[in-house]
Image 1 (cartoon, rainbow, N blue to C red):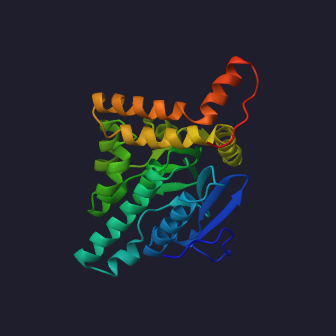
Image 2 (cartoon, rainbow, N blue to C red):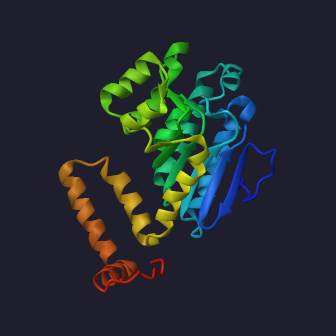
Length: 267
């Protein structure tokens, strides 16, 4: 699997731009509404794999060119391969990419400028944080085509309360950005011209924190979600004790008590 170059060409389906500790991955199939073709899934997987091992990257932004953020799977490509084994492979490929986002050491933020449907809505739900422009819309609309959005439902149901999530899945109706915020699918709604600045607020905040705390925090948060209450507290206590042994944890506490700004070493 190839590694996406940090400054891909304008004709590439996925662009990567690194600046100040933030890697921005931009879906670049605007004429196809940034559909998740096999090639796009492969490019995203490669990019996330490379970023996972890149300690210079502290946060990741997933963005898109064109009117749509992501319209889900590439239906033309799917219909041209009417084979159950092919579909199983495709959906597993997509699921592995989504899980890679969850397991990435860095926080991943979706920057949603347009429509996000089906697996595109799944992508938004999978990201750790999401900011949308006021004119963005969201749906898991496969049911309208006779195909229940089963894999998108995994991420959706882990972000949105059960009844609103099922309502979206069973009706296929679009919701607007303020409703998505109310449901918990996204964090914030802003005017289109404020979208980049709103993302920068999040990335600046993350970059100001001790790297060890951010890495530990994302891993712990995701892992504890799958545990029972007793298991989650036992696991959290162990993680927190380990975190306390990091240099930057001691530095942060000392700086707080001494009323000064901390100096992070990155461990």
